[in-house]
Length: 154
Image (cartoon, rainbow, N blue to C red; front, side, top):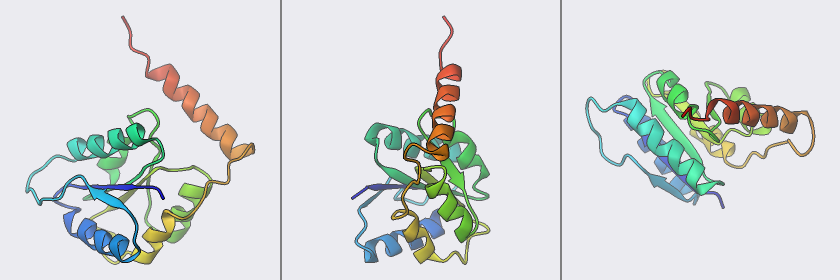
């Protein structure tokens, strides 16, 4: 089973705690990389922490939560190999996995207060439809873009 890495800033902390309960009830293995509430913490630090863990683990997945979800998405997607998807409904959740093979789910701590937590759990069991089809071809293009722009200049 895939291990889930969780991270939230102060604006996403409450939702993260609710998600932890859902994952626990579903016997889903997870690690909370931000276990303590910290007022004024910075979402870039949290997003980088989870994104690096996902790249390191290769098959891991993550959940990031900040106020709007936008900041976490921007930071996480700077890390080559991360495909972080900011979602707000079940269709986006489903497509982020089936079509984009997203490995980090990003949520808004402000606007996802009434999220269906079972829907979030289903994200981890939804498989990528890639194979050798158009979705895999698109991911290959993303990888080439990452490689092109992640080269350091000497």
